[in-house]
Length: 276
View 1 (cartoon, helix red, strand yellow):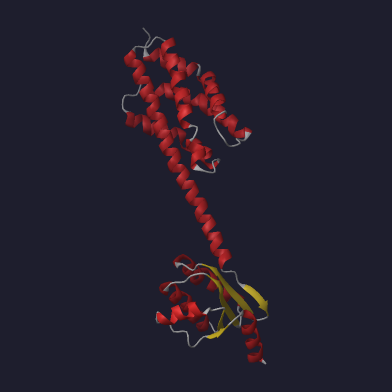
View 2 (spheres, one colour):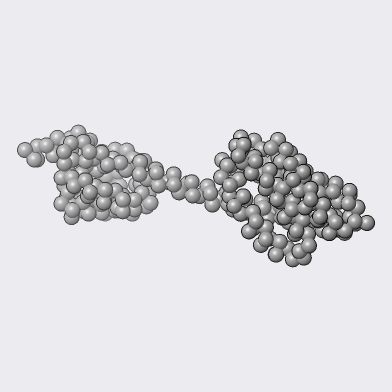
């Protein structure tokens, strides 16, 4: 009858061979292209994993195993996750890979003649580590995607309110899409300072590309006109559709002191006449 110590020694000595079998199987299950550099890194990590796994077999408390595994694997998990474009790419091959992993370890258990009790312990320890790995991979994937989404959101905010100089002293601020509280804050904290740095005489805020706007956000947008006026900038509004203007009036937002025009061209002509 074999012992867990003998079993652990076998894993440590043959980790690279077992890791190669696991790598070949895993590559056949992944539906994304894996760079050669990452394959080589996975080859090394698989061998290291079997050696690490052998060391956990002499640890009694699973809490200690989890802590040890997280320290060992976090960088590797982060690199793997960064290669995945969607969560399904991470999860889809997991059941088959896990089954192959269990079969591989089970075969070694039989070869080393472990008792039923020791075999169950070995497989349970493996499944525990794999479960922790999957949990951390999903959490890391969410963190990675949230970071990407936040970067995309910032880029969209920048593109959704471009400052367009159209002639000396005159810039147009075209508002595009749906104005929400995040975009209103971006306008106040990012766009207004950028306009101020350009030192224009007139800013034309064009609403023709606006889809929807609620009362609170409309108030923020017209607060922007007040800030620009305090900076000594003449503010005109164009493209304010009748239904949008009616919505703003019905909600008690006062913009009677702001000149409005049906389009940017009319606003520019008015400014040209004004400065003559």
